[in-house]
Image (cartoon, rainbow, N blue to C red; front, top):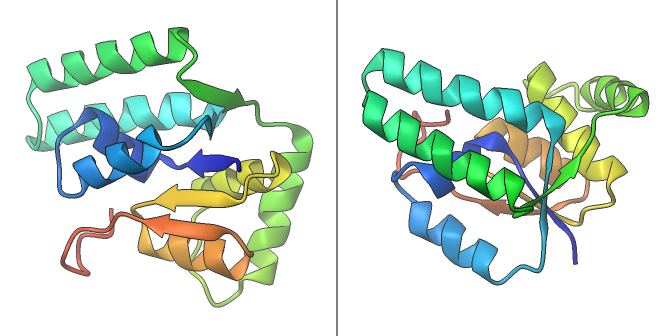
Length: 151
C-alpha cells in the first residue's frame, strides 16, 4: 500500500513536537512513503519560519535540516515530481471541494498523492485531512490536542 506524507506531518519526524512519536511509529511500519518536490521548499520554509518565530533554535533548525538532507540523499522518501497535470488536478480539487478552505499548496500535495496513486495520506492539518477524506484517501491524522493548533 502506498502512502503520502504532507509537510505538516513530516515536520514531526525532524522536530520533536506533540504526536512526533506517533508519526515515526506509523512510518516504521511502511515500505515506502512519498513526498512531492514541493516538500523540499515547504519544509525548508517551515524550519526558517519556526526559527524566526522563536519556536525552535538555530541549532535545532540546522540539525533538522541536516537529518532531512541525509534522508533525502539516502532515499528515505519516494520523491514525486510535480508535473503539469498535478496543477490541473489541484485546481479541480479546489473546485470540487467548495466547502473546504483548501490552500493552494495543500491542494498540490493532495494532487501529487492522487496522481502517484497513494491510498494513505498523512497530515497534521485539519483542513487538509477533511479534503483528503472527501477525496477518498485513507487519512491518518496527527493533530495536537487543541483545535487551534491546526498549523
